[in-house]
Picture 1: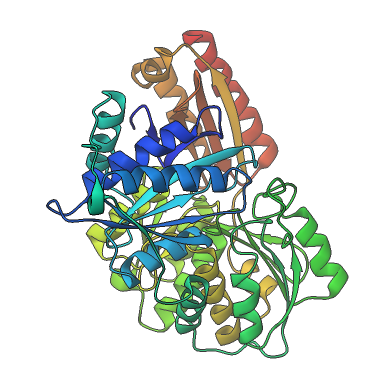
Picture 2: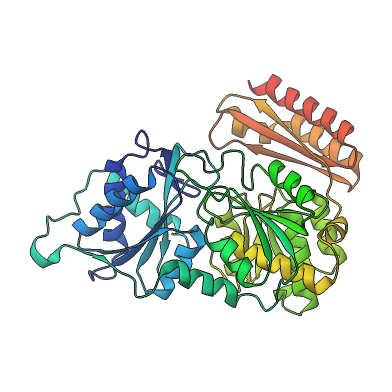
Length: 449
């Protein structure tokens, strides 16, 4: 990744690191790079509920207009809605202003291309190069060459809700669902869709005030949802993150069903329907060993990628796989969406529940996940790479894997931002793997700190 763009756009503390000046320059450079052979580009801008969203939206729009691009502002709306609307409006690009599951003081800017996919690294590098080198792409246009803010032909929220309803062919009459929208971008859309499907929806995290997004609510804080599901005697709980591209499920007993289990349950439904392309599921190296064993048991294989939804999607596009994702609940159903969509994921999960005739807890119990222990080993920046070639460390890892004999694994990953090596060990005995992880982390630190 470059100096501005990370794995999911440009992020930082709003008005400090992610300033209006930077947003203006991203708008200018982005519109310039994404314009099609000199034509006037149309770019959609959506945002979550953060207080800084208005500031960044207007700065971005000004940058786009300055180079002759047109802007359609679609307001507060989930990230995947922008990916959908780019195609609907036949726009050249979409921009989402959101820092996803992070606290409100952070914000981010991420781009989608005209087909609804996140930008390729090479395109991001062109945008970044223009900004970092201070290249003026404005050309100081005048008269009717300056862009305008346009109105979409239909209400964006209405369009997205209609699209979500088109992805599902079941009714949810009689079901009670507790829904936690993280005081974020889905606070209007998801409850509406589920009510139209006949469900009794009890909402949490649906009162955004600009500063309470992800604050003790949403997919990264499911504790309140777990309690509420039990208190209400609900059939299920659904939690999204701030920009609604992730889903975490809570079963009727108040237990969390993470992304790994959700993918397994939906993959089985797809396989039973004959729709699991190539009998393959895409997942990252962090997916649980139990995830692999379950899918193997139903006759499916796993295509493993690096951590990050962009790598999951990259692989899916190459292999033709139709479902992939991460433990965090970022799941891509490629038949329906070009990016992770918490609402689409939840609707597919509800379909799996209805078709199985089982309770969510029963489906969850079919997937046995192994305990995972993660320990950070502090090292020098040089040590983040050097450990891989150390004979003693390589032998220690092999010894641990031999000891677990197929019922566990060792995963070592250098941190992308800190002088740390992350040691993750997975196995049946949590106490034993905890001791293994600590000992291996100490060995790595002792040699490379």
